Image (cartoon, rainbow over all chains, first blue to last red; front, side):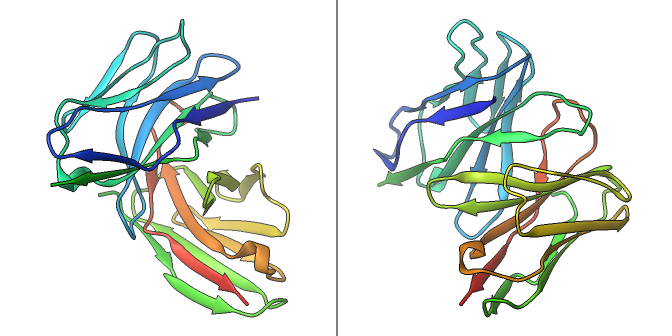
Length: 114
Length: 113
C-alpha cells in the first residue's frame, strides 16, 4: 500500500534559520507529491506540489524536489520567519478511478522563535 | 481561497446520538472527500465522492455514512456517535483526478461525551 513518513516534531528554529523537513514515501505506481501547511485553528492549505520525478515544487520561499531514486520529497526553506510556524504535512496520491485520494504523513510541527 | 464551508464548526454530543456534518462548495468540483484528523495519525480518509450519488469508502469508514444528492453538498453522518469519533473533521474538494491537489474546508471539531 501507499504510505508517507515524516520526521518527528516539533522542530524549533530561530528566525532566519534554514529549514529541512524530511519526507519519504512508498507507493505503487507513480505518485504525485504534495506539501500542505496547517496554521492553528485552520484547515490545510496546499503549499507546493510535484507530479513527476525530478520536478521541483516551490511557493513562498519553500521548495521540495521529487526524488524517485530515494523516494523522498524533503521540504526546505532558506530563511524561516515566525509566521512560518505551523504544522506541515507531506502527502501523495496515486491516480485511481475513484479520484484524487491523498495519503498523508502524520505532520511535523514547526516553531520559529525570534 | 476555494469556496468550501463546513457546518457546524463545533459540536458537542452524547454517545449514541446521530450526528450529521455538512460540507458545501461553490466551486462546482466533481470530487469531494471527508477526512478526520487525530494526533499522531495525520489525516485519514473516511469517505469520498466522485459525482452526485457516487460515493466510496476510505480507510476509516466504519461507523460513518455519506450522501451526495447535489454537486455542492456532501454530508457525513455518524449513525450512533461513539467517543472514538471525537475528532476534527475536514472536507476537501478537487476538480479532477489528476495531480492538482485538494482544497480543504475550515474543519468541524466534534466532541462525543
